Image 1 (cartoon, rainbow, N blue to C red):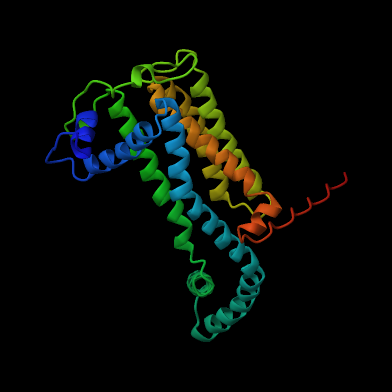
Image 2: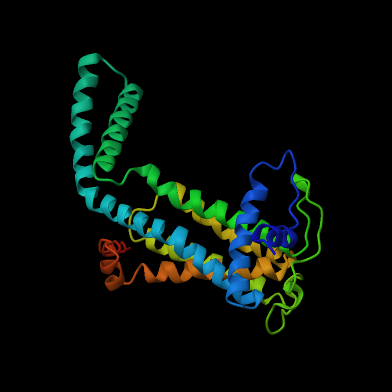
Length: 289
């Protein structure tokens, strides 16, 4: 049977005028899953775990390494940025005095020149701030598209682009392991939903812990609390999802935990070309009453 015909019979994707590129993305994801499942003769649970690790290693891991190198460069440039900030205050204050600016105008001009200089400095050293967004730009579409692919394979509908429910992919109803043999049903024990929530929360706390080693802004603190809430909110969502999706979410979440921990190992950072992490700042002594 031709490859395309076999893929279409398995995925049951039907063209829809409003669906855009989504069926193509789902078919590509299914092609990866199908290749591993058929060529290596892996059970579906191992296929999902293996595909998740392979996709994360191929697409998000290299970007994460590159991002860590860029963050390291920013840390190394911090003393120069601080020196520029002090010099810039004096320079802009002189301009403000000569031009007769008020304090508000002075602050606006100071921030404008500061941002321009810092952005130029980071750009010259290959660590422009926009590059910090590369990882979520890749990771989020991958996460969403794989979740939709596994939802469709589990026989669940995708009604927002005209797809109705289909029969599950062959073998998925008995392709699980232990208590979750049917990957088209939610986890009856709720073990995986709680493990997914725990993995997400550990990732949030690890990132928050490392951020506290430096100067954490108010915005970062707000974002940390928001992600904590999202991690907990993900548990009931995962409890309703078929185990094919839950297994993918579990693997992806704990892959991130392992990655976060590994990136803090000095020898590994050195081998990957990452700069050494800054030493934790000592806490200020408590005031005596």
